[in-house]
Length: 109
Length: 114
Image (tube, rainbow over all chains, first blue to last red; front, side):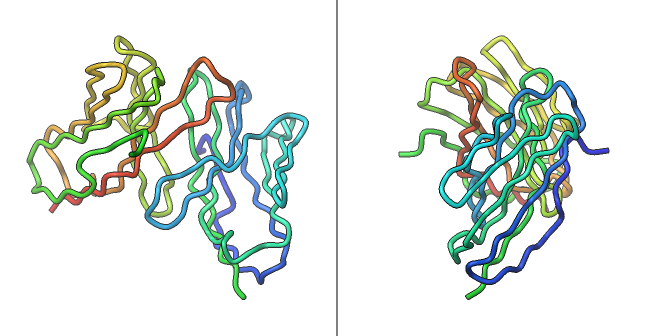
C-alpha cells in the first residue's frame, strides 16, 4: 500500500462547480499535511497547509481527519485558472515529505 | 532569480553514462530533497538531507547517489544511467525552524536516457 494515495482523476467540471479531492495516508504518526498545486511542466507550489481544525483560504477549504487518516480539499466556484494537478503531501516519520500521485482537474467554460 | 536552482534544465544522455544533476538554494534552508516525477506515479522521494553531514535514502534510492557539498548545494548522481531513469527530477528545500515545513521546489530537470 502506498503511503499517500489520492483520487486518480481526472476531474472534469464546469466553471462554477464545487469539486472535492480526497487523500489517505498510512502512517498514523504523520504530523503535517499539505495540498500543493502543480501546473503543467512546472514545479509544485504550496496551495495550503492542513490543520486539525480545518482551514479555509477564499474558495479553498482543507480538512484533516486523523481518525480515518485522510485529508480533503474542497474548491468552490471553480475557475478556469484552477485547472492543474493537485498533490497532497504528508510529512511522515523522519520528517520526510511524501507526496500522492496527484489528481488532475480540468475546469471547462 | 529562483531561490532553488537546478542545472541542467534538460538533458539527454546515453545508457551507461554517469550524470550529475545539481541543485543550489539561496533560502538558507537546512533540509534538501531530491524527487523524481513520472506520469501517474507522482513525486517519489529519492534522497533527503537534513544538514551537510546527514544523508538519508528515500523510497527509490537504488541507482542514485547524492552529495551535500554545502548547506546550499545538493547534487544527485546517476552512476550508470538506464532508460527507466527517464523522468522529471525536482530538488526541494524546507526549513526545520518553521512549521509546518513547506517544501520549495526548483524548476525541475527533464532527463532522458536513450
